Length: 135
Image (tube, one colour):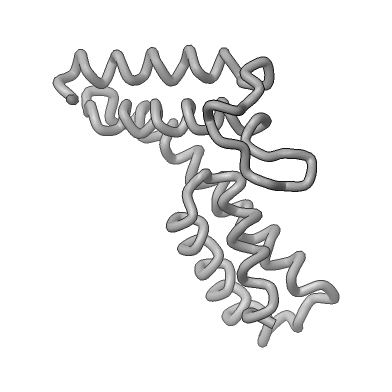
């Protein structure tokens, strides 16, 4: 099942994280969770959906940790840089894919679909990172 579903799983998570490497790690984490839970609880009726849900929850937790890090380490420029990257990447989510799922390059994206509040937050986080000594 993993060979069949892993590509779809990673693509779905990458849509949330905007990073294939992180998506691969989160997908593998979901697989490890399945290997631990399924022998005790039984294989779910829809194992692929279970894996996707588990991986997406991990992705959301990953993104939340970025914001929590800012609260826990407010004086660290790298943390604010990470938050800036997360906000700026997420701001273009709606414009990145066409109707058929094909990738749309940055220069061809419909900027009216961008989330300008996320861009503003990202730029503010970047500026704060630079003020803290980040480059």
